Image (cartoon, rainbow, N blue to C red; front, side, top):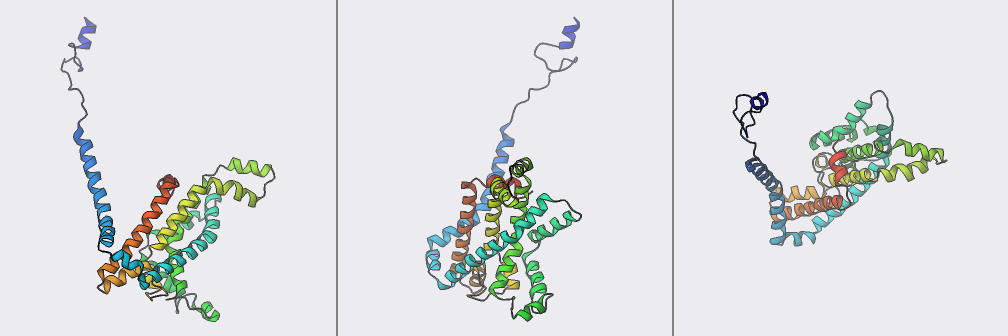
Length: 293
């Protein structure tokens, strides 16, 4: 009798009152709503880029732009300057990443903040800051004048602007990758007599290679698309400081919309190629998890 009262009527899921709660059923409305919102936002992100590339291909402006001396000069300058900036970033950024990953010291948090700061700075602010340091009346103007070197509105300024805005991406990714290397493996290599150079080349770099590669790709892509700091610090001089993003701006300002669209399409295709390379070489996990940590 007690058991029957506790259980309630047959088939009920309620308590002693005997009222049964409605069975929980999964409604498809929530999932369909999420899918619809996801599709709309994906369309919002992809449609403008797709429209730009299709327009450049269909109307033939992309084919014309590829043969244009202005676009070719800008593309060549972009490739050369980004290559140089990438080499400098690795040479100087890798030691910094090692220090941030392996050492504990007072003020480390502040140093990490300074390294990350160019990522969130508006590009125009970055260009103005570079001008105040390396300009003709900047903080370092005297040493450069003594050496007879003029930095602003030169190709050197383009490289410095690219390094300033893109290097943090490499440092962040390399720092995370090196910090994730198992220290026991390195200690074992030391016990076997490996030098620090051999240890770094044979243990640390291979184990952190995914993070390093991801940082290199993102750094190069950011340098290739740099615009604001470049135009503020290096100017827009054709053949000397006019990179491909500046051609997009110049042609649009000059009223040649087709040429602007074509140059922009080249940048889009380059960026798309970078993202495809990231996924083909399985660097996507590093970018998603480590690159934004």
